[in-house]
Amino acid sequence: TGLARTGTNTLEFEVEPRDHLGYSNDYRPDVSVAGAGRSRSRLVGDVKFKDSLSSNPEDVGQRGAFVGLGNTEPGTSADVFGLEQRGAVGDGDFRPSDGGGYVAYKKADYAHALSRSDTDVQMYLFETFGGWCNAVKRLFYQMKDKVRNKLSKRQHEDEASWSTRSWLSLQAQRMSVALQLAAAEEIATELRLAAASEDAAVA
Image (cartoon, rainbow, N blue to C red; front, side):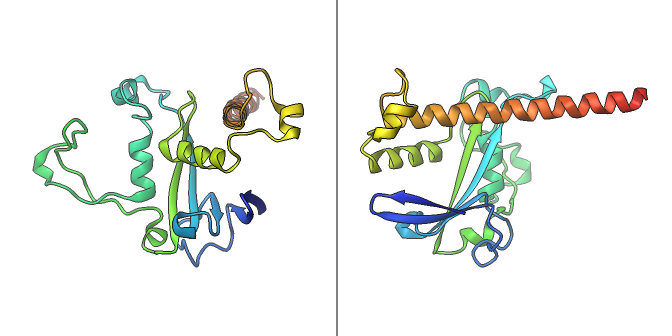
C-alpha cells in the first residue's frame, strides 16, 4: 500500500491487495487504485511481463514477427478480458487477417470486476524485448500530462542524465531498466535452481 499524487489529489494504491473480494472475487489484481479509473472508478490492474519467444522453436508464433506484441497480447487479453464465442467449430481456426473462423468462449479472469460499473479493469503487458502495450503507454502519457512533462528539481539534479531531459524519458528509461533487471534476476534464479538440482543429483 502506498500513496500516489495526481495533480492536487492523493490516491491510495495497493499492490496485490488482500481485501479485493468486494470488487474482484474471482481473481486478485496486481494493483488496485481507488478513484484512478475511468470516471473516478477503481482501477484494477493486471500486470504481465512476458517473452515473445519460447524454449521450443516450434512454439514461436509467426505473428510476433510482423505485429507488435503479436505473440503475447492476444492470449493475455483473452485471459484478462475473456472471449465471446464467434462462428462455429466448422469455420476453422480464427484468422486474425480477416476476423473469420471460430472463437471459443473463454471466461475472463476478472469477470466479476468487468461486470461492475465502479471498476476499470486494465491490462498492463510488457515484453522482455522492450514492448509495452497501449494501456501502459496511455498511463505514462497521462502521468506525463499531470506534471507537464517536467522534471522536479531533485529529479533534474540527482536522477536525470543527458538522455533523460524530460519526465517521460526519465520514467520510461527507469521502467525499462527495472524490467530488464527483473528478467535477469529471474534467469539467474532459474540457473541457480538448475545448478542446485545438478549438484544434488551428483551427490
